[in-house]
Amino acid sequence: MSRYAIGIDSGGTNIRIGLVSEQGEIVRLQREKNIGAKTLQFDLCYQQMTRMIDSFLQLDELKNVRLEGIGVGCSGQINKAGELFGHNREPDYSFQPVPIQAMLQARYGMETKVINDSQAAIFGEAKYGAGQNCQDIVGFTIGTGIGGAVIIDGKICRGAIGLAGHLGFLIVDYQGEMSRAGVPGVVEDIASGTGITHIAQEMVRKNPQRGTGILALTAGSIDEITCPIVFSAARDGDALAGEVIDYCGTVLGYAVASMIHAVNPEIVILAGGVAEQGEYILNPVRKVVETRVIWTGRGTPVTIAKLGEHAGVIGAAALLFP
Image (cartoon, rainbow, N blue to C red):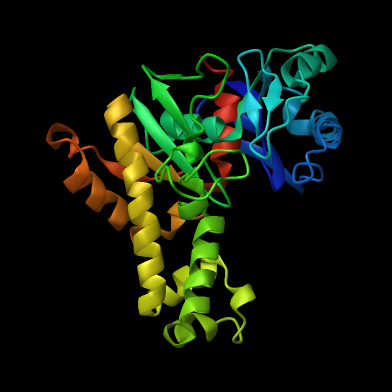
């Protein structure tokens, strides 16, 4: 009899819940906007999550399956006990850990595992996507922000307190601007969707004449420039948009290079909405790896993820299939 698990991806924008088979197939999937994540109202997030689980457990598809438990990928800093113990915004030393794993396990009486949402997505890629048959993997999730995961010998590296894999905080310019989390010159502030947006806006402000191609897509408004618009302009051949993407991709490439030197992975996986732009972001990353990594590591493959927006749900459920 096939085994199944509930996988939950609780990110900064959406909460997705799915019934996932041991083969990594999603049998049923539901999604809602996450009503509490952006304002750090974790009680609202938990209430919404449990309401979705309660409803999900009533579905006909779950009544006659062997359910192994619940896996959750949750945004924020998650320790080995499955507690949310910190977030990636301004330091808050009064923050009290939220024991998500223990709370869910007590409520539903089944095995529950909670990890960071980016770790869940890359674990899904490792088991069923771009990293299949690889044991040592570095993965970056590149969307509004940047997250990631390190997988060693097939297992997620969690670190001493759960901070391993927060790759968006790799420092690429120690004299750079301070991030709101108190870390200077981080790759997230440059190569994420938010970073690409801000850099494009500033470059157009400094030289509006060179920004005409981008501004044509925003009715002339600099404030309406977004990351997707920058990529769209680049595909149309706009030189400034191409320069922005090449710069941001090169900076990302140096972060990837650092992780190759630190971990020596079999493969580097780029996931998330920015990574899904394909060759536009992949080419500058690969160029750095092929020319700036120590010579014996320059053949490390860098590839785009395969599971798309479902990776987090699949990876969270996969925690129940050792």
